[in-house]
Structure formats: C-alpha cells, structure tokens
Image (cartoon, rainbow, N blue to C red; front, top):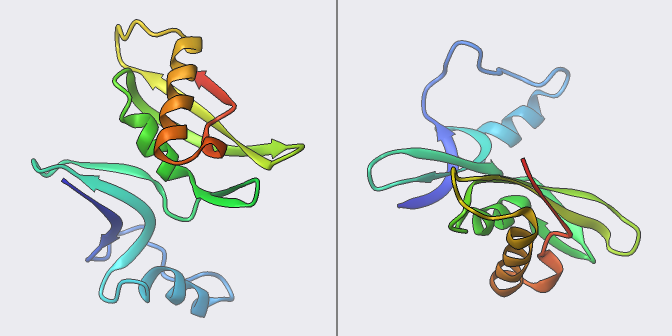
Length: 142
C-alpha cells in the first residue's frame, strides 16, 4: 500500500516525443523529474495486491482564500468515506475566496446516503483532515 507519482519505464506506441517548438519544456516536464522514467503527471496508489488506482493529476491545484490545495489531496479524503466509490474535485470561481471546491461523488451501490447527508459528512471530514477552508461548498452525487 503506497502512493506516489506514476512513472513509466519503457516507451509505448502513442507516446509523446516532444512539445511542438519547445522540446526543452518536454524534457523538463516529463523526463527530468524522474531520470530514466517518463513522468505522466498523475498520482497513483498501489495496493499490497499489486492493483493500481490513479488518484489524479499531481499538478491540479486550486487556490482557496490564498491557500494552494491539491485536488487529489481532497479527493483522497473524500474517497475514504464509507459510501464513496470515487470522486473528482475541481475549483470554481468564487466571489469572495477566489476559488471554491466543488466535489463530484459516485456512491457505492446501496450506500443508503442522500446527497444532503453525504455533503454534511464530507465537509466535516475534510474540515478535520485538512482545514475548514478546503471543505467543498458543493457536493454533487453523479
């Protein structure tokens, strides 16, 4: 059970080889961070059984009230809720905070949760694990 950056050790047939007119940027973004590996930009969780779960982009950052926050960090906490199968968190324009968090959640089959009950529990969970400012204002069950 470990989390980290998803890197690939061998080339594959549709792999990017450069960025048009900016090969230096391609090298700096995908090859230099982890020498000998292609850095995908994604986070990944590997279980002790060897299964992989993508946890989101490592560079997805939202800025809530001046606090830089990775969306994957919030998604990880949301995904630990007993009723949640998977989630996605995005930023949206907010008049006061600059950006707010908006969570899309897929429930596990027969979870028994309503959107309102789940939203309250997720906000409380995120407030405890990260901070109150990180709690999503909107939770949409999809």
